[in-house]
Length: 85
Image (cartoon, rainbow, N blue to C red; front, side, top):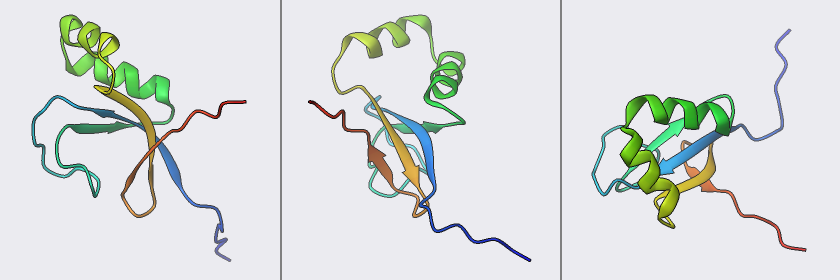
């Protein structure tokens, strides 16, 4: 018997805006790259292995260069929105 989930699949992901166009990115991502993983922490670890320390520091310092979100079952990047109380 196969179980079907009614929940929407959401995979943790980071959108890194490096200003470049990369192939095989989720729908709607025209520039930059998406890195996904088991958790956002794993995404950051993967990113740190792919880029220089200098680039990582630049990402931390500039708003909008690194966006936390999820990739859904339709292969779309969905930005996380922090709730304010």
